[in-house]
Length: 454
Ligand SMILES: *[C@@H]1O[C@H](CO)[C@@H](O)[C@H](O)[C@H]1NC(C)=O
Ligand SMILES: *[C@@H]1O[C@H](CO)[C@@H](O)[C@H](O)[C@H]1NC(C)=O
Ligand SMILES: *[C@@H]1O[C@H](CO)[C@@H](O)[C@H](O)[C@H]1NC(C)=O
Ligand SMILES: *[C@@H]1O[C@H](CO)[C@@H](O)[C@H](O)[C@H]1NC(C)=O
Ligand SMILES: *[C@@H]1O[C@H](CO)[C@@H](O)[C@H](O)[C@H]1NC(C)=O
Image: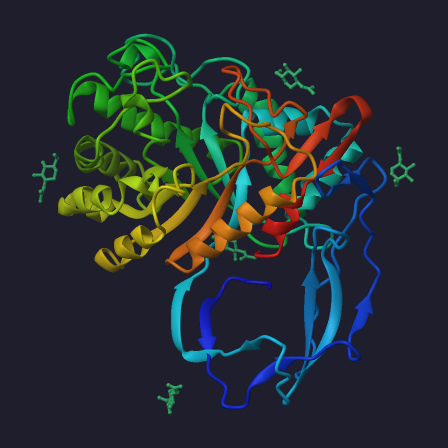
């Protein structure tokens, strides 16, 4: 299945089209094949280095009744391409696909991942040629899965090697000392630029902050339970809005423009006592009031009124109530364009909550803004070759797409063999695992699962 930007639509044919490919299949070989490295009890990863990485056959147009089929399987294939032919007979044992073109659903924005400090540090730890192979695996039309969305943490998060923000000088309400850091200038920005130069499509970047500077917070810390000091409209809330504008402006000076922003990564984390990594608490009410009084007006005044501002950026357990509360205020509703959702409590909350949100607020898009495997304290963080984790991705993406979500953004583009670096030891898995000692990287089943949707 290859979902380009376009309508998710279904089409009802009165002539049933069935797959009957056993004797009609034409295998297409040309792109590099996967160099398999199997793991006991798991499937395999594909090994890439400075001179070699497996690729993907181009999805060139064929004439009906022919069609292209790409397949990956636990046992052997990775994006293997076949040209098949539709037939008009209906073999009893085959699947029948019925398409109704009269009904269309959401327009797909795209798929992507996050340019975290950890991801870009891992990428930069490889030789230049191997870096190119890794970036191409995500962004190039010839060798990669052509991501079109990139999330960019605004300063530090847990996937950083230290705790920092862009404005750590106390009482700097004018944000005069606001400055990007080595992480931006030496790691994130150079990698994003190389991704853009390899891409034939646009990459929509969106920024997300984890915490305001400690001096602006009730707990004087980037972690733990804490919120912005004061209330909407005061100097702390204005300064925090200015921080967002400055972020866009400093990145623009570096040649990068943003499509979107989220108001806060996981606002619920900062309501939890002793929360262990960068966070800041908001309720739906305080987020609404700050967007209406400070963030929206500041972005507009400084020429960033077109940016796609997303609320929530947290687990869907908060929906649809969070959206109801924020959109209750007409001013906040004017500034917000969409809702960001994370996947971490999805086993507890049915995806219908997404459809319910869409039905109540059809003019606001829903984007899946973060997901990763191996995030629980129990179990393995990095599990090389896990086909199950790939299936978890596919399952979640399909559920999201069936419930009005416009795209799905993975977490770290690349991590090391432990699932880091992460200053808070909150290690997780990623679709690409880097082994800098051997100057190679491993494309996990999750990478291929995601690639089938783009
Ligand atoms: C890279 O991998 C290919 C395929 O496994 C291998 O033939 C080649 O020797 C490797 N190159 C380096 C520099 O290790
Ligand atoms: C689709 O729409 C066309 C034009 O309105 C109509 O003639 C046709 O019956 C519809 N098909 C279905 C399956 O609803
Ligand atoms: C990318 O975006 C820019 C600015 O929004 C636009 O001018 C350009 O046509 C887009 N390119 C593609 C390939 O969509
Ligand atoms: C929206 O919120 C702002 C800031 O709290 C407030 O000043 C305004 O009156 C609210 N507007 C509406 C229509 O509720
Ligand atoms: C990954 O990074 C963490 C933090 O820097 C480090 O402790 C760990 O040893 C690294 N793992 C590997 C396999 O390099």
